[in-house]
Image 1 (cartoon, rainbow, N blue to C red):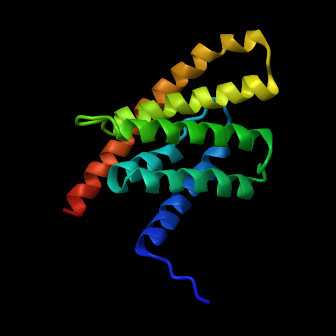
Image 2 (image 1 turned 90 degrees about the horizontal axis):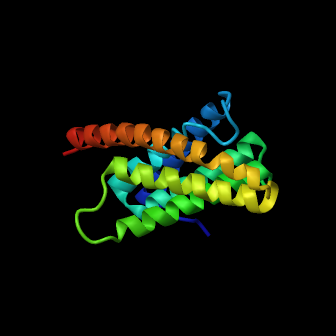
Image 3 (image 1 turned 120 degrees about the horizontal axis):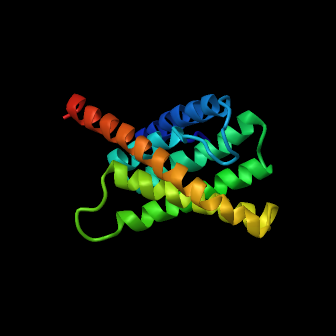
Length: 170
């Protein structure tokens, strides 16, 4: 029995591969504080959301986390659990945001929501499973500030890519 792939399957695979590549490259850079990374692979998720919708963005995001962890050797480690929890929370908030009435959010708004949800998800799992100490909450404002900054930058980059895509493919 031969399995048929659709054009959408191939597009998701290609975009997930791009996000995984960025994720792996980004993992090589040192982090100033545990839990703070630019999250540039999320630019791909926001572009996919903008161009192809929530379902495709969810696939790209989850494939990035799963395959990236397998390639980096972090599958089923605390790092994987933190990454997965952040991805699930950001996908969840994007799902809700896509269903709000009105004009909705642009790439920067979606990116900010996703970055903040990602950080809240990661922080919650870190606190519940790994470091249930009240002093951890002192880091929370710093981590949210970083998410705000990197979410804004990622959203601006994603918006520029989406705009360029529309110009090239009218």
